[in-house]
Amino acid sequence: MITPIRETPVLIRSMVHDDLVHVSDIERRSYAFPWSHGVFRDCLVAGYSCIVVEYGDLVVAYGILSVADGEAHILNLCVDSNYRQLGYGDRLLDEILMRARRAKVNEIFLEVRPSNESAIGLYQKKGFGQIRYRPAYYQAREGREDAAVYSKVLEPID
Image 1 (spheres, rainbow, N blue to C red):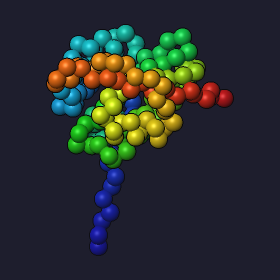
Image 2 (tube, one colour; image 1 turned 120 degrees about the vertical axis):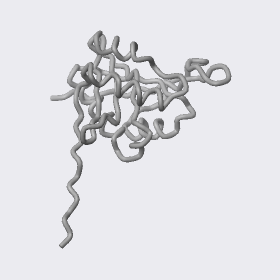
Image 3 (cartoon, rainbow, N blue to C red; image 1 turned 60 degrees about the horizontal axis):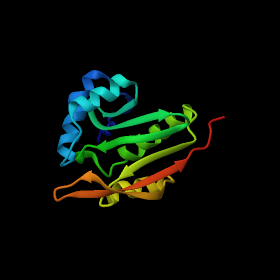
Image 4 (cartoon, rainbow, N blue to C red; image 1 turned 45 degrees about the vertical axis):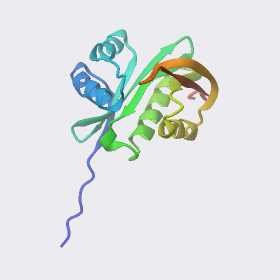
């Protein structure tokens, strides 16, 4: 008799202080110019919507959302490299969009490196459209890299 493998539960929840070490580790392994532990701590302390995705008892993704005056800005969204292309980014972005709608946000913005085709594909799939470029926005190994700015108008929640 073959016993079916139980699916490991996925939990999307608000970030807590104890998550910062895991989030900082994922960030450091994902980017050549990562945010510092202190930047994540400051976002949490400032009251930004900081979210993690847990697979079992592992933090595998995180997102940071800033909301003000009817607008929102996705400041950071990252999935651990060992868990990419498995739908975690998709689920995290859905949660971010839902939190923005609950906050009565009319439009949400983000910047992304034009070289990050995977992220751009996800944002376009979720209805984001490019609205402009920010020249020399990101630090790069040789000089600076532009940012593509994307936005999405959000439908209100009834």
